[in-house]
Amino acid sequence: MSVRVQLPGPLRVFVGGQAELHVDGVRSVRDLLHALPEGVRERVLDERGNVRPHVNVFVGASNIRDTGKLDTALQDGNEVSIIPAVSGGGSALRRPRRSRERGMALR
Image (cartoon, rainbow, N blue to C red):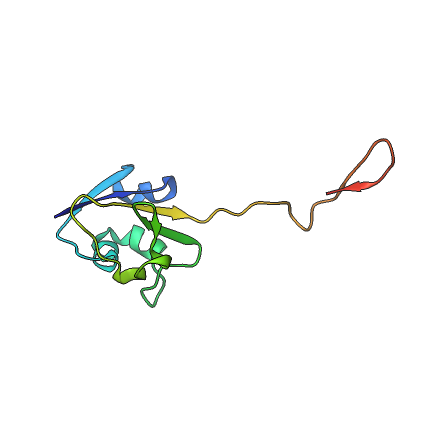
């Protein structure tokens, strides 16, 4: 059984720059993550072995937080994507822009 793993840019340095890995002989997401190189594993899992809050793991289009978490079963040919959470918006410390016409603060 083989599973394909898609890695984001920041984790590729731990696998020689590869964007994709093939991992054989794993039956669950837990097995898969523990089979990954240490540098990847340390950044995906916390000290207790749980997926870090700022990391999302998908099997196909399903987030494992909505399925069986680390016990989510894998099947031959599954694609697993490790995706860092992205947040946006402005900084609370940023100075607000002012409208040239009215001198009003814009957010």
